[in-house]
Amino acid sequence: MSRYRRLLVLIAMPVVLSGCSTAAKEAYYTVRGPQANVLVIRPVADTLAGYDSFTVEPIVSELEGVLPAGTPQLVQDRIAVRLQRKTRLENTGSRPIVIKGQIVYAEIKGIGGTLASPGQELVCHIALFDSADNLLGWAAIAGKTKSRVRGTLDEDALAEGVAKGVEEWLTDNGVPDREEDKE
Image (cartoon, rainbow, N blue to C red):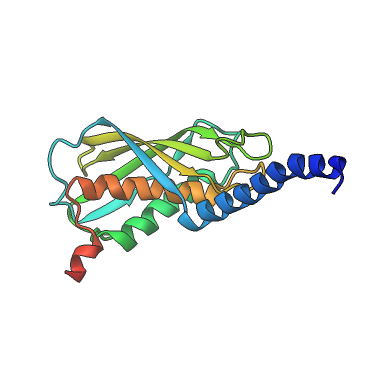
């Protein structure tokens, strides 16, 4: 092999390998699914174990014009579906937890994003109230995904990430999850 070809192989090898690793990472993050981070601003003072139902009020957005118009409704729907599926809370009951939310931040990366952090993030302020409108707790919940959708917002995955964070926060504070039924 000529010196020129060896040099070309040495230059091309890291490029080829990095491309394969990027594709592998994207596949991993796609399979793993969305994640959530919960930053509790006002902790839940008492256990939520006595609550039997939930209501998700319409989610509002401070980012009109930045996010697709349907994003707040998608977040609201994902929270409701996940709580119905993963917790013992019902849609109706005598002692509901009222969930109110506001989308306050979105980070969209992809083609224009950094290679080191190709993720996306949607941050919602979520507040929990009782039926008398008393504040039970408040948290900033970030739905995150590193599965890239090439420069577009993967709002479905981000909404699912926020819903996952709401579910984790509630179950960490006494709401029984459906997994306990299996024991």
